[in-house]
Image (cartoon, rainbow, N blue to C red; front, side):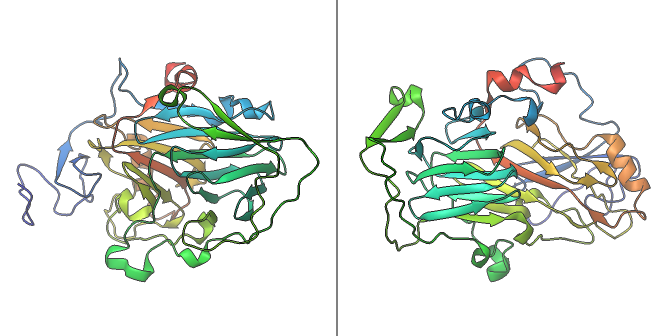
Length: 367
């Protein structure tokens, strides 16, 4: 039964996620770290297992994946993971899109891992650069014009992405909307072509195949707009990280945007926990109600570089967390490092995600 009073049985540390005295801290929690919780203190590393079957962690380097837009201007992003609530894709576009796109299943949220360029939208132009989040409302027409090779993580919801409720932080919530870049209208003149192609992006199996609209005028012809439904960019450098000196905070405090069954978070550089005995790395957990995707943008963890572009999938119910060697190093180097310099983008989903064949073919754990 959920209660303010939590029971203790057997050998447990006095403080949560601290002073483990050789035990391994394993959390069995509901509701993505916000519901009922049991902390189990084990003798051995719970991630030290060999997995057979579909419910196993997957790690893949984005640089090894081959979206068709990496080599063909007419190509598109690569589907990596999917469920009924979302699709997670990878784009590595090198050239300008000779067509326009319109995602009609739901909102699109993109993270720019590498590259700079321009997004032409119905609402006006938006410049992007590494570290930017790009939000495109459902059915917004847009076109990407990269300055050079651009790598994007794309999260397409089958619902509406919204800023989460601020809760007790109120107007001090980490995401300050006033720091978002919002486009001004800039209609684009026709360039003389006979037709302008707008590709409707949707789930082919559910909708019966791809759909393309052809206009005799440039579809980005908007002279003005008003309202509260519009695209924007927001750079992670402007995200205010919530920290604690005495306990490693759960991922939920780093929430950026959410849709039904989909939660997007920023794990960014911050002061390391300073109270002696406090565990500075995420505890072992099974996050039993959510699948977890981690996209490593860059940085390091107590002197160990994080592999840029690594994509990690941890299915719900399966143990995951930093390996024991990394935890031991964090304790040993407690006085040497005062900051955590990681840059990790996380996507948690309520329904199980299915990895695509391309992702499974490049799984580092299977080679």
